[in-house]
Amino acid sequence: MKIAVRYFTRGGNTKKLAEAVAAAVGVKAEPVSVPLNEDVDILFLGSSVYAYGVDDAVKAFIAGIQVKVGKVVNFSTAAVIKSTYKQVARLLEAKNIPFAAEEFACRGSFAMLHRGKPDEDDCKRAAEFAKRMVSEENIHG
Ligand SMILES: Cc1cc2nc3c(=O)[nH]c(=O)nc-3n(C[C@H](O)[C@H](O)[C@H](O)COP(=O)(O)O)c2cc1C
Picture 1 (cartoon, rainbow, N blue to C red):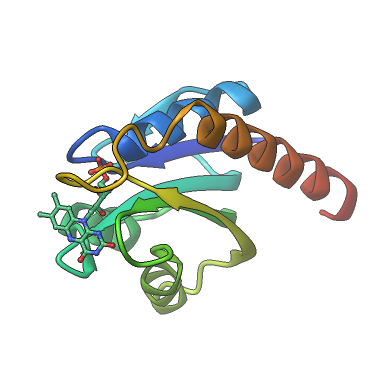
Picture 2 (picture 1 turned 60 degrees about the horizontal axis):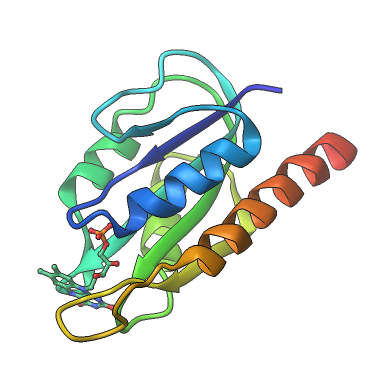
């Protein structure tokens, strides 16, 4: 199975999750500035929100996908909203790219809020989530 991990980060929070996810599934986490250059079965895509929206770099990455993606699995950090799922799903729908119903989301530090997040436990849970998504894909296709 071909797996890729892409993320966008401004402050490093989402990168922490991306690296935990990538290590768990045996690939390298790359920023969204690195386009997909081959078809993938699962794309783990990490993002967060800045003044309510995902960064334009995430929008451009999704808009620019030119390979076949079996399924996107969203993961995100945010300080206030639950996750970026809805926003990312809308972008994927516009490109007819399938996405998983499940996601991984946790708090990300912002100014005085949520210091130290995501922490070791969040990264561990993200890794377990990623492994589960891959094994379910192996079973159900
Ligand atoms: C300029 C800016 C605006 C933000 N706006 C929001 C927001 O509207 N809602 C929210 O939940 N979090 C907001 N946050 C918090 C980030 O989503 C959170 O810190 C996230 O973990 C950042 O991820 P990163 O370190 O990977 O860039 C904002 C952070 C910054 C720096």
